[in-house]
Length: 113
Image 1: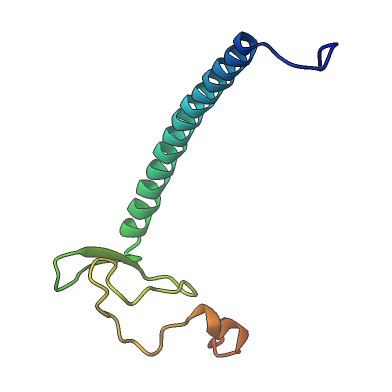
Image 2: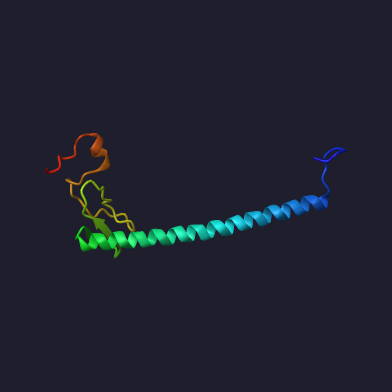
């Protein structure tokens, strides 16, 4: 604060506002670049996981009546969404599917040893 009441001149306020806006723009640019980098890495990891699952026949390509194709993993203890993400139609009606809620209710069948 300044002596004599602590007031700032209009020019000083404008300069601080400009500096603040510039800092916000720089941070926005950094966050945009950072998020693009993270998204690129996640896409690469996703492609690797899908390729490995295809290689081991642990994934199904399911095409809904609406034309949307969904990937369904065939893995134990992985809850599968039974509705098409595009149209919402239920496409799997397997009552044997394990759901997350079943874990706490002891409905999960014992694994083969």
